[in-house]
Image: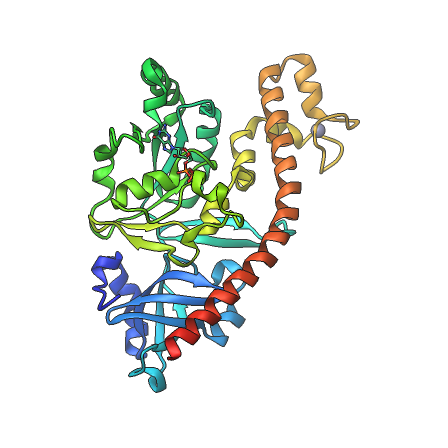
Length: 365
Ligand code: GDP
Ligand code: ZN
């Protein structure tokens, strides 16, 4: 990519003030467009460079959430010795305040968080109107969006498969949508796609969330007007089942919007709603203060105040059932996720290390 105007990368006037002290220090602003194994691709005012986090930034970070993530605005110091080379490099010295962030728990840890994408303005919560349609799931994606600070927009895809049931589906979603707008579209026929245009203005940063198979890649391709990504039907015949976006994590759509599609965003699942689960069950939380055991799961523990309240009718049975159901799902997710995350991390660092070495070699020529 040639020179990148920072506005085109989503720079906003508010950032000028946050950047002032770094400016005085001789640093330059840039946006993180991709990460490969702790090497970041930055969009700078002058073009694209590769950078690492400075030792100081790494040491002073209280956790992985204080390390750069795709979508972050950062202050970097260009490496003078590579400035005129074909592959200029730099060091990231600081992260500017985030407007929004999607985080997930680091595998095997209760409290450590990792930012998977930052500074997203609008997140499309995608579900499909075929057999996977489920307003409960949309409700929970809304919680995930609320935690991030990005504006949620509900996208119901595959209207072409829903026949006359589209209106009923939209009505069902409206019950859980709160203030979020709802758009019924078909990535296949392009019906309704244009209704997404208001969120896709120049410099606007968007991302898609939703279960696998709902059509996220198809929507991205339809919006891009070209096949940026392989869709699932193609991926399945690909023995590696890998996603081509691993090295194109932030891309500009033709209208100027910036679309973030990282593997981490793809893997964000409902177990990440953990914290919010407690907020939406404040009644149960309050009752739990009276349980004998602090880690009571309110199933069969002696002295459980929640079970007692359900038995006496003080807590509606439906409320209790719904809490138990979510809790069970979350626990199942967490076990699977921790195992899977370890395997996945090993696999990915292998693939990315390879890709990066190839890239450096190619650039060095
Ligand atoms: P992702 O896993 O969310 O990225 O989903 P994909 O974009 O890979 O789509 C999953 C499958 O649904 C693919 O076979 C797509 O061709 C199909 N698909 C996506 N959008 C539509 C749509 O609007 N209508 C129909 N009929 N099929 C779609
Ligand atoms: Zn209890």
